[in-house]
Image (tube, one colour):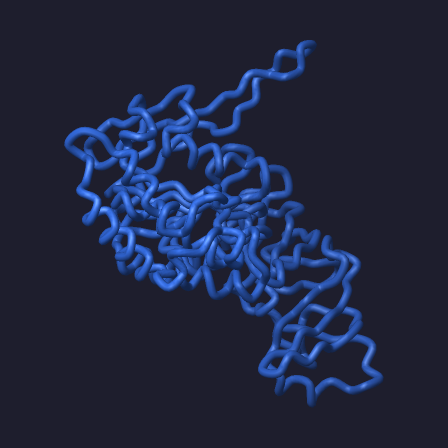
Length: 366
């Protein structure tokens, strides 16, 4: 099911009686989410991603704008009639019910022509339980399950109604690191097997990039960039997006453009012909550094961290806005670094270097 958002805005009234200043949680959000895709809403806390999700579900009423499921305008349709499945951050399972009863609950509340025979309800409950691999846990109660198992129960309960849209609000935030990795792969598998258009909210960029067909980066209620994860990583539209995506994060420097060259400190690091002279921010991805005796960019060497296949070189530079510079290079470069070496020179890979206007923080292409 295609989801189309047209100029979607959500404004909350002020809680400050003195200022009466309204809070714009989502500001003029316009987007089309293709049918059958897994889409990540990504951004820091307070950016409006969960509010957007709840407007799509119908739990929050939009201040203005429209929401379409396919060709149907569902802006004013009640949540129970939108055909959505919603998985909350805390799973919201009924503690006194078994797994089977939790999954059956949405079907038991159907009325009229939608009501199903009991045997069909049970058959459907076991079908989704097998899909999320909990069919052997059906007689247990939530407190007898691990966090990952509870999360699967919540997904099964959302899927049992055969929703048109599946919505996940921070689905992995309550899990430990190892379980997060396993469960996000499960979410991707379930989404592919069902083909249901799925929108999930997260602040974890690695999580969003690893399983999404498309990500939407938000800041203060405004969409910053939409696209495939790798495309956004390789071609960020502004400094916020560049800094938000990437592990380790992008290295940011004070720089300037003068006479067709890009300078970081006193070092002329790249030719940027045709770009006007100005002060800029320079972002360099960790994999954009190549150690070289003839390198144009000089740094003070702090430490070399060997991580098996790759090596993280930790260095500093007075122009860096990060506490340290992290560059990821092949392990073969370890042999070229002397134990008593105090400085290191880098050549830069041009397509891993981004320039941003210092006032607007928008990307300057070169």
